[in-house]
Picture 1: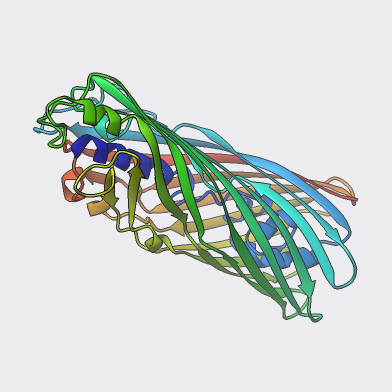
Picture 2 (picture 1 turned 30 degrees about the horizontal axis):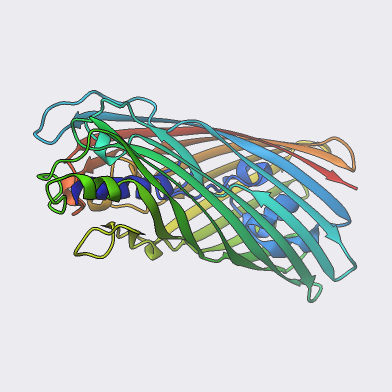
Length: 429
């Protein structure tokens, strides 16, 4: 069923789209200090407790009681150019496809004794806002998208030896999504979808300190399986029988199909990170990071509800074939004096979507990162971190006729770049 399939594609896009900062929909920006180095060495750095997002074992380097809070303002610039519709007609360029957003985070940690450490963190690891003009030729693939997440993680770490630390945590994650799309290329009606879910996963980490100057870390965040429940609603004109072969000539079936409670299973991917950190001198450090994100777990989205699209037995299904991605980063830090620290970093982020699977809501492409950060140690208790990131994304071609999913064909060329500004404050009690 063409129009319901395009709605499914839109939900696929909101939850698995090229967000402002990383391939797929992951937001790495959970530490202003780590962002200054483009997250190079994030699993080994453990400079404050915000690094526990990347490796929970780093808790053992946080003495006493510490509280860290911050956020990243993400300002993307995404333009769809050379837009073509179903019959090759030229559509208007769409500016500001991806909208700005803030990704907040906080972490509190406490040292129980020489061996055991505990902590609790809250962050928003996935999220984005996209919006196209109502008049754009790809309206049936989606118009407005809004997704938000909140993850809360109690965690603990154990210093097994003088050199080896181990850690684990449980992730409790809430996901909320909203989207709109047009009924058809004529855009005579709007379909909206709202859904939410609570789900949980886990994280594991290990940190090995060869010397006081050299350490390596490994961090793993598990796949989280969401079972989203929500409402599908339609307004405006109904689809005709010619557009829906199961309409039985009345439109009543279509009205039931597009106005009902729905369910869809959705998995956020597992991630494996490896990092290294080395102090060359007392003032100069270098670091490196590799991360593998297992996006191949995202194969398709299947929508079910009380009223099914017969004879398939579900409302709609969109086939997706995402690939696992690699993230590489290198960085350096220089202590300018006893209070100020300069951070620099470069990174390469691989796209999870190839041309044949790219949709108007997933104009994902490879990205190159350049970052700089500044840390300030006000006194023995209080410190601040600032970071700036510029990301240049490769041009992304779009041709929906290659995806194998129904919908009016759209072609476009996406030009994307991102700026991000991070702030963090840390207090040791």
